[in-house]
Image (cartoon, rainbow over all chains, first blue to last red; front, side, top):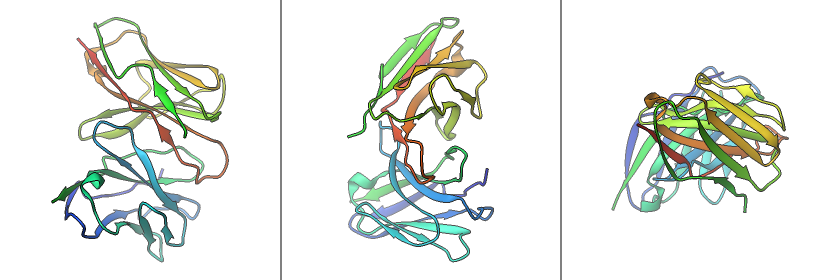
Length: 108
Length: 114
């Protein structure tokens, strides 16, 4: 399975944009890029996913590099409730393997 | 809303006991998964099931088995619990179909083996 690399932790100020990076240099042409997040004391929840084009939904935006070797999850205005561990995962027809993710701290 | 329900939020067992962790989903999803989560290690896949009576090993199946007799229920079994199986266990389900289909997780079971 293709692997992803994320920073262990990041900090942000409340109401500022946050850009969470993910490197996936061995991505294959059919791998989808998924993002999940895990709030404290909860199971992970889906955030967004994409294949080649940038994607937007009510939670976040996903920017995918033209060569698809990296992607960035964008939270447009971080709130305290966005403090969580964010996971970047690749999936083709296999099953999702989660790494350690990025722990996002949001400061008031 | 999709609901994935894990039978216990907290569980304390003794070494050597047989432990059953139950997971039920109400969305008629074909695929179900068991992960364990330990500090600094993220989520690791134990077993998954593509459909009733089907099971596949994940990355860390040793010491575990699973049962999927009905579509909505996926059980994780620790045949003889050991202290290194103390962990948070997370169940998830997903409909079959497009690759982009998302996983729905339960709230987890924190298992302590003493």
